[in-house]
Image 1 (cartoon, rainbow, N blue to C red):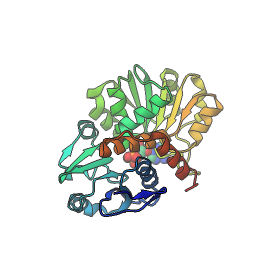
Image 2: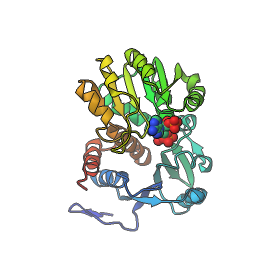
Image 3: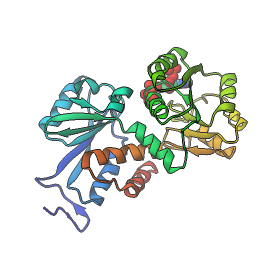
Image 4: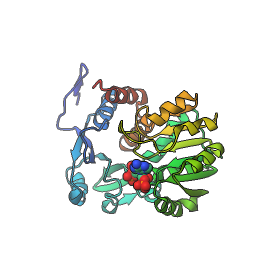
Length: 292
Ligand code: ATR
């Protein structure tokens, strides 16, 4: 049934429903980005935000099946909470312990993690290779775990895991060391100074830089100790860390690419079709630049 006439979409009795679950959810760029992708490929589907409560997660997963919702993304703070309620979990997602994409088919809910491979695709797009590289990861939360895992799987030489709370880094080191070389360090200028000299890539996975008055994680002038360092922040805009990297003429990348590619991979899992990456990129930039 034709329901996308003259560029105007209207849902009908055959429209598939997709969405995103999280809390809060009103800031999410995904509804606009995914909807633009559906429109572009003439897929009869909508993508809506679902703000849900933690205690309702088991019912939410059940409801997805009952209501024949085709797929959802999962965002903060539920990426780990949904895991026990899924019927099947893809291997990388299980190893990472975090789900950001669920596909429902015949009442079977299958979980995926597209954040980690999405990050690798965003690096590839910028010609950044991780094979045999020494990589500093700042932070030891969920994002650090997903990235540490995929970087080791992609044959990074060494991961230097730097965190304010050393015990937390050590715990993460323990869970990832079977995939490759990873060592924990406390967040101290002298230590970072030494690591920067040996590193090829530095990645911030902490939330520092998100707020204007965040104190720096370390003395960012230390970045100038390594002219070949690639500096990456998973935050979606130019943080003080990235600004400093640019000042020193280092290659720098924010987290927009990761957000784009995790969405593109989710789209492909759901639809079996190649994601219209340029359409999704344009949509994402419109949202993040405050144009939509
Ligand atoms: P996510 O799951 O998004 O990665 P998280 O699990 O809340 O987020 O982890 C946040 C990370 O940011 C942690 O590594 C945290 O360090 P601690 O383990 O010491 O708490 C780090 N972080 C948050 N605020 C910080 C600050 N002011 N200085 C240094 N590190 C900070």
